[in-house]
Amino acid sequence: MPAPENFPKKRKRWLTTTTFFSVPCYNGTMLTKDYYNEFFDFGQQKINFSFFELCLPDDDPVYTLKKVMEDLDFSGLLACYSDKGRTGYNPIMMYAVVTYANMRGVRAVDRIVELCQRDLAFIWLTKGQKPKRDAFYDFKGKKLTGEVLDELNYQFLLRLKKEGLVTLKELFIDGTKIEANANRYTFIWRGSLNYHLVCLLDTIDALYERYNTLLRENAYDSKYSLGNEQMFIIEGIEKVRRVIEENRKRKLTKHKKLANNTVIEIDNCSPLEMAKLQKNLLKIAQGEGIAFACGKGKRKPEIQKLYEELEECGRRLLGYKDCFEIMGAGRNSYSKTDLEATFMRMKEDHMLNGQLKPAYNVQIAVENYFIVHSYVSNDRTDYNTLIPVLEKHRRAFGETLEEVTADSGYCSEKNLLYLKEHKIASYIKLQGHEKRKTRAYKEDIGKYYNMTYQVFEDEAYYICHDGRELRHIRTESKEQDGYTQTVEVYGCADCSGCEHKARCLYKYNAEKDACRNKVMKVNERWEALKEESHTNIQSEKGILKRQTRSIQTEGHFGDIKENDGFRRFNYRSEEKVYKEFMLYAIGRNINKYHRFLHHEIEKFEGKKEEKPGQKPA
Image (cartoon, rainbow, N blue to C red; front, top):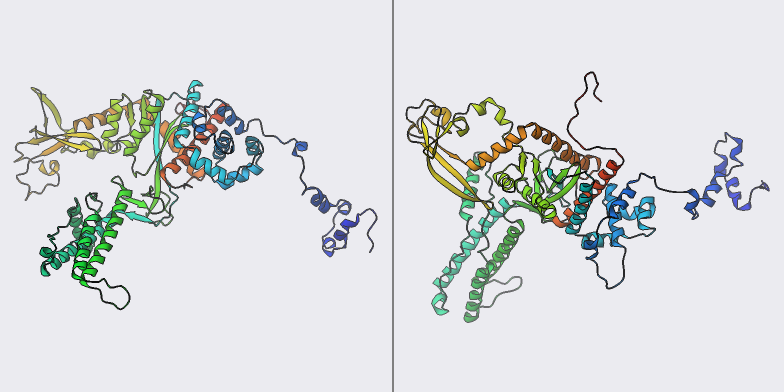
């Protein structure tokens, strides 16, 4: 069938194919409008997008980002670059692209590269340039440091202070655990290291004994002027041995094992001492003409066997020493694939067995929805994270902080003492906050707070439930995490005949403890600090601050994990993890600022009272 004249010859194949006529034709105009050729002839060609008037919305957050960056000082970032060599991409432009990507919830470099080629906002930021992944990895890994990110964030916060959005006088602090970019089953445990180290030391002790026996039986000690060698001593190893023996007994009785996490001072032991024995064995072998056997089917002499066993034990001892140095004294585990990640108990338990995962403890300090500080550590608890965050605030803004609000995870004597010394009001919830409301707490006659406290002639004493006096006996001091903990000891001279012994004495046994007297220890400074903080959080202002903390800090983490899916880091090592989270925090801050500018959110000032007859929203 010849083609009609109004169809070009190059389109003849569409009419001659049986596939075209197999399509049902419900409209006669479909034959005159050639949709196939219209798309393939025009759509696959490069076109000028200016004809289509492409533009970004006026309220796009990228304009807010550009507005914020115009007032920032990038001298710290530019100082990381050299004037020599070829000029790369503009570092300010690279920072803008990475920050805007985090504002959009994009952290993967490959995805950022793709957006620079396809997304209109990224094309506007890069002015048509297309940085590759190597440029971004070099920028984020080498040029952009944690100090530079902190400096840029603090400049932005000072701008917010001028605009009245933050005061930098109060902080709401909370933390969460985010999984590290490490394999889940690459753990190294301190308890396991201690167990195998004890076994290795027993083997080394036996080798020392064999060495001394060899010298004594063959008279090598007098012939080569070699003395009797003694094995080195490791401090703390005896405690580990006792725990191991106790756990073996508990295993037979099917009881729970004890934790064997004793910190061993392994710095004193050195494989060089074992190398000295190997050197002596080589000296004896050369003097006696004993050749070391090598190869299959040859019998090794006793000196060679001892030499090789000492070498193997020295290698293992050096490996354990390296493991202890990586772990340090502050944690009991680490991962082989991320040496700075610690195994922690996570809420996301995919196996439903309470297993531990390698993770980092991420802390944020918030005011009016803005993240003022962030801090990343491998500490499983929050006790040791509060002071570093407050020190960052002091270095950045001076002595401006007046109030700190946090949950009970931060309540410790060291933290409350730091707040008092720096004249910062503590709104930290006590660990026994809920317990204080119970009747059992108020009726426990064995505790000092349910006794009468009196002072006579500058001497303090307590009066128990039975009316007997507990006089001051002595003062005990203990070095605890860089500060001195002082405890006052009080005791009753005679508790005989007291009918309240069973309720007053701890684990009282009428047969064994008939002559036992009441003795109690009171950390008066610690108790005074707790009472001051408890009074603050019970006030009307403290209740409002606790509400604000739960809304702002926990709201951030809920948004981060659930809405943005930030549950696992992409980088390894504490430094890179901190930069990854700090970039994300800066992106969130600019998003919050954008929403404030467009009146999408307002400053939180507590729960608003509902008017009578008004239905809740």
